[in-house]
Amino acid sequence: MTTFSTGQIPAMHSRTVVITGANSGIGRAAARALAARGARVVLAVRDTTKGQAAAATMDGETLVRRLDLADLASVRAFAEGFQDPIDVLINNAGLMVPPLGRTADGFELQIGTNHLGHFALTNLLLPQITGRVVTVSSGGHRAGAIDFDDLNWERKPYRAFRAYAQSKLANLLFTAELQRRLTEVASPVRALAAHPGLAATNLLGHLDGDPLRRRLVHTIAVNFLAQSEEDGALPTLYAAVADLPGGSFAGPGGLLQGRGAPKLVGRSKAAQDEVTARRLWRVSEELTGVRFPLRVPSGSER
Ligand SMILES: NC(=O)c1ccc[n+]([C@@H]2O[C@H](COP(=O)([O-])OP(=O)(O)OC[C@H]3O[C@@H](n4cnc5c(N)ncnc54)[C@H](OP(=O)(O)O)[C@@H]3O)[C@@H](O)[C@H]2O)c1
Image (cartoon, rainbow, N blue to C red; front, side, top):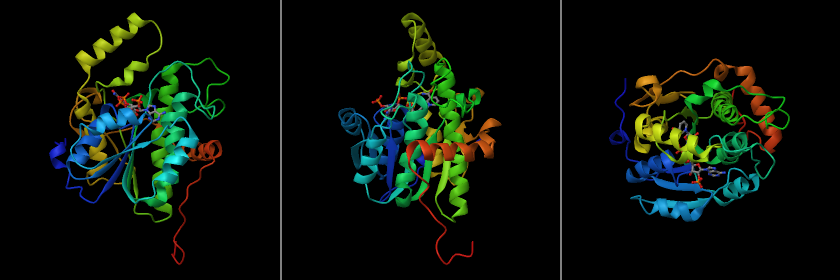
């Protein structure tokens, strides 16, 4: 068991970290911890007023930039507007079990925001990334399956949690295939994933359905089961800075992986399926119009 804590984050001076959804929850906690260690932290947020408010609570150098992952035009505008080298990209933003909704490009809200938005963002930024891509998944990926016949819930009745689980499984398949592609082109960049266990954040605020049930689930989860957002951010930070191989998946090491110090954790069989990972990558390229931008360096033997 590791004893990783924010005290073990190395000095991050002259490093740039981009974190999506850094105005709230574990993204905000991770941003705060990295800025405190000297990193220049870019808070990539859909609401810059909220982003500025979060940045005001952080010591160190922060920048707030607009990024709406539910709109590919916004993702492209963010990437075009940020040309600096990036040491670490943290794909953290997400939403969980909202009522059926669509992104600006017509994707189901959870696969569109949690996976396709980050897929496009990562590939657009990849030529600038020098260190790592960390993508935040969830223990809920275990309930997920990728439905290639109806990825966007257009034909079957919408099931909010299954759609969330599909998107979080997609985060892990994306990480695995990204790492495979990075290795293939001899890139030093590493792709890793993390999950926070259960952390008391705004995530449950999107819950659909009966308000009483919603309040009950929220109260139990937040008051009795969840760890703090700071502790929930530790697996993300561990994946961002610890000496770990590409493809690693970090999560809490405690009871049922819901809380505790981070360590490397296992993933579902579906998350290890290379054929599905490659197919999801191709489908994601088609849906977003964004492709893997790196090639084997010319003159290389590979
Ligand atoms: N909390 C947990 O127990 C838990 C468990 C497993 C996995 N996770 C994962 O952890 C990550 C962070 O969630 P959290 O728990 O910290 O929840 P949170 O407090 O609700 O934070 C989610 C962040 O994502 C942002 N976001 C949502 N839609 C976006 C969009 N279209 N474009 C850009 N940003 C968007 C939110 O922005 P707004 O503030 O503007 O809404 C917010 O900043 C998520 O990927 C989630 O799936 C959390």
